[in-house]
Image (cartoon, rainbow, N blue to C red; front, top):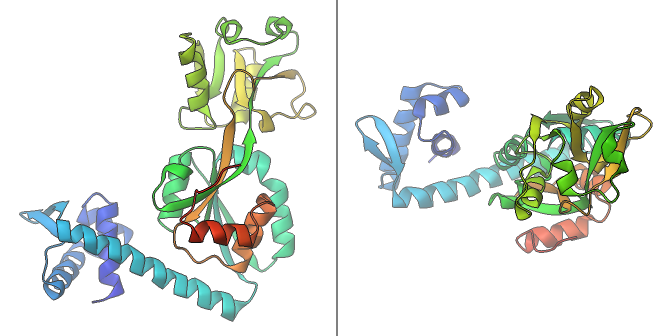
Length: 313
C-alpha cells in the first residue's frame, strides 16, 4: 500500500468518480491511476468502487470506510511534513489564506501588515473566492485558513471559530429622499431599486429572510460580488445599496451616506476556519490571534480537542 494510491482514490471521489479529471489534477495518466486502484483493491481484498464497464459509478460500502481512513492517513502525512518543516525551518514557511473580497479588502489589511512585520520569512498568499470555494479550499488543503461569513460552519471537514458580529447598512447618494425616512423601514426600501450582494455572499441570506418575513418583494435590480462595485453603481444613481457596515468609510466614500440597518436585518458572524485534524504551526496561531485576539492558542486548542464549533460569540 502506497500513499500515492490513497491520494488517487481520494481525488477520484473528489472529482465525482471521474478518473480522467483526477489523473489531470494529479499530473499523471488515466491508465496509471486505474492500474494503481486495481492493485490497491487486490491488496485489500475489496472493491472500493462499483464499475460499469471501465467507468466508476459509485463507492462501495467498504470503499466508504477505506476512503474515510485514507483521508485521515493523508491528513496525518501532511501534518508530519508541516511539523518537520516547522522544526527544521524555524520561523519560515508558507501561509495560504482564503477570504471573501469584503474580508480581504476591509478586515485583513492591517492584520496582514502586522503579520508580515512579525514573520518576514513566511510567504503569505491570499486567495479570494465565494464562501463555498473558501470552505472547499481549506477542506482540500489548498488553503490553511479560511475567512468568510457563510458556509464555513456547515462544512464537516472544517472547524470554525466565530470572530466578530457585524451588521448591514444602506447607502444612498447625498440628498436622496430615503434619507428623510427615520427610522428606516423595509417597506420604504422596497419602493426603490436595490443593489446588493450576490446570493452566496456577505449575509445575503439574512437580507432575503428579512423581506420574506414581512412578505415584501424587494426590487433588487443589480447584484455584485463585492461592496466596491455596489458603491460604484449607487454613486451613479442606479439604486440604494445594502452592504456590510465595515465596508463603508465616510472619508473614502464621499458623496454617499450610510444608514444603519441593524434593526432591519439579522446580525452576521464572520468566521475563521481550519481543516479538522490539521497541524497548526506557530505562525498559524499568530495569524489567528492577530485577526481575532480572543482566539489565543489555548482557546484554539481547546476547541479543536473538543471537536470544534462548540461555542459562540
